[in-house]
Image 1 (cartoon, rainbow, N blue to C red):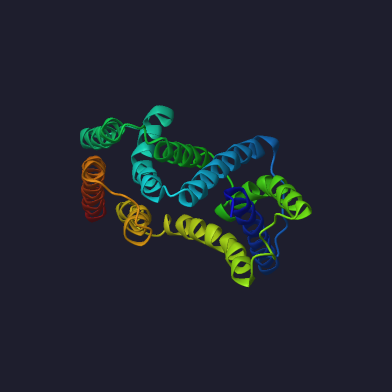
Image 2 (tube, one colour):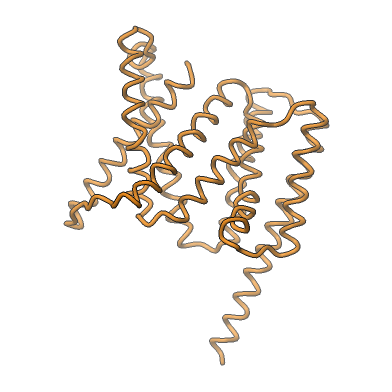
Length: 272
């Protein structure tokens, strides 16, 4: 099945799922929806474009047999987000964090020269999702409403595309069996639920733990690509990925140490 159909169904079913949840929540809380101002809408239009690009690249990469390379993009993303924080929000990086970023950059450069091709899929995924996080930092609305707006901006072109496919007789939905139909519908739930759970978890667990958890998904993706779909993973790739993994390990340990020091300092302030 072509990537455009998968991503279009992913957007449409995600939007329907989010609208259903919003209606239920508003009835329980007896709240009225207030349409955001244009300045707020511009933020979410930008974030919808970025997440749409990221979703399409990821689906296309998986369908095209680039699962391993796409996992590299999500290994790089946390480090790239830190760099964006420095460039756009004047945040300060500790020396160890600069070393982590340098190790990851060395890994990407090594992969480019050793394999003979720039890992553009990984870099594009990392940049698009990193920029998405950057824009979301400016977003004032709740995660549920914000994600609903983002998918809402994408749902009309997605619906138009699916209707064109249905009219031309090349639609996969309701033409390739019940299993395919259920998988396409569940793509909406699988898309929105992790994002909402992540937003909720970010407020409840320590930042250091959250940082470690961000590497679970690309790790599982890498193992699926190598051991389930039998994608090639050469010694040269292992060397390049090794630089990235070492950078991530140094970055995570430094983050945990900084968090532990903050906890100790807060404890001393409370005792005083």
